[in-house]
Length: 151
Image (spheres, rainbow, N blue to C red):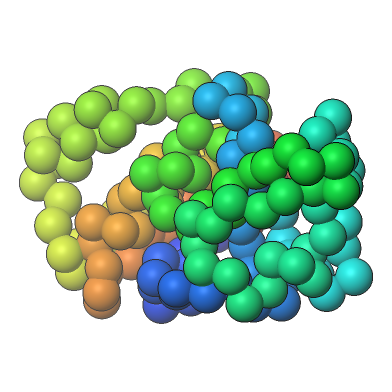
């Protein structure tokens, strides 16, 4: 399945969280989750219950409290943060490795890149940032579940 990357919608920086946004919830240094914000949504974890309705209108990077007084941070889903979020069922390249790949292949803005093996989408999102604003990244993964997760 080929997944075209929409650079305008996926990599644009927004300051405030709104209903339907993708947010990275930073619980601890080793625990981050990607979630879609919904007005009636609730994140339940060992720290308590966090109502999405209280997230809407806050800045990305905000610290929010649970019903138990614990907190999490709400981060923007930048490509740099995204590489830390997915479950590592596939090989995840570090930022340093990705920088080397981009430099070695001379990938610059406006390039067209074909990636085989989307995996988690970690490399894909960083490649999309590099080729922005008018370049394209096309990626392929034969494993339907991984493709759906990356999408």
